[in-house]
Image (cartoon, rainbow, N blue to C red; front, side, top):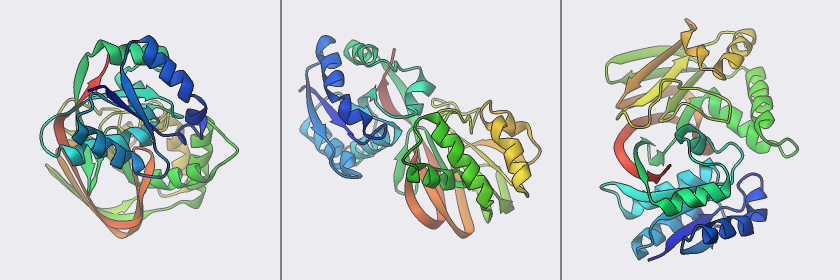
Length: 296
């Protein structure tokens, strides 16, 4: 069977739609035999990926951004709930392309197609929160509030959009009381954010879980509380280098399982997409070695 390419035209604020021909040409030049499907509505990538796996297409290639990758992987898991998924390829057409950057995948489309054609895979973990699987990052608290502001912006593009969204979210000073239970720890009290990383980088510039390793069989989470807007603003630039985890207000841990109970509802972000507007219960777990991704 040929490869199945699932293209999300909205990725990169519709730039993926404009780059469709470029992506197809790159695959042809690399000698990749493929069939392309275009998602036409949110979460259709899940259905297309599930169908492609059941029909025997291989590899499954996501042409889009981090949210697109997440949908495709969730669809692959629905079709194959046990064992290792893949091979899975990435044609990066998103804004931040966090998964590609974290794993050192090519960002140039011709190089990405050549990487797919070479057929070399790297096995990584996946994370799961409630019913959603993620390859890169998930969060409750402040971070998904930032995502909501980011989605609403139409004039700004690129990384600057994430930074402005972060400033707007901090200005609202959202906070929660949460209970966190993980493999060897417990916390109950005020929380500004809880970010859970399979990989370190999210949002293009933020190393929210700097010690995360996508192949160590664990998730890395960071939680903390900043009592004032000034305190939050002081931590923001440190998130770009990962230095925020050395602040006394922040705590970084590794775990196979994390259970969060929020006393008041929080949105949920998964691979850059809002998967719940207001929820109180979140169960995270690591799925070790579940994905074979085509990599250099």
